[in-house]
Length: 258
Image (cartoon, rainbow, N blue to C red; front, side, top):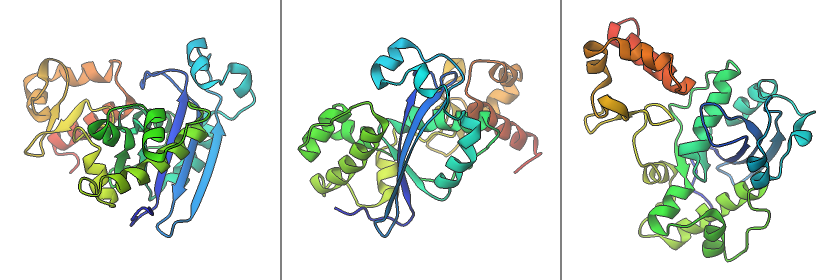
């Protein structure tokens, strides 16, 4: 099965210091860029996270402080990574909920406000969970008939994710279309405005809060009802992307930007 692509698509995976999108950092990124003509380019980079890698995280991915001490920090390679991602749709395994938000946070910390608003996001885990509900190793065995060697190695995981998506399209011809726009919509649980899903679009395409005491309420209405809520979020433990999106909505509300 060859993917039917209109744009290049990047399959990527992160190994990190932990699972907190707000505070944890990348220690390894691997991505496989597939072009519409079938050509492929891959890259794996170890990153110095500028913090201690907790032992429990190292036990999962096998990367320790000593392995990254001489590696570049993210801001030193951010521009190169952003260039590789430019114009490409994005795919991964649990990528919509974790890898994409965390990568965007790293870009913002590096001073790169990468625009992903026109990209399509395909989350192979969501497709798998909707249709089979298991893990990447089980998905690889189920769809591809092979054991996943070096699981939790970014290189192995990203290649397996690519192969699983192609096998999913083969296996479910009545449920899936070989089209990235369809796969992006199918693998999305919500219509996020920010990558962390704190703000989503309702059935009328109005941005609403997706958490807390104002869950389900339009952002514009909250701005009017509780002006201090905006400041509370800006000073709170929220992702930089969420704060940036909320600021843009705030400026639109005041008429300063369209």
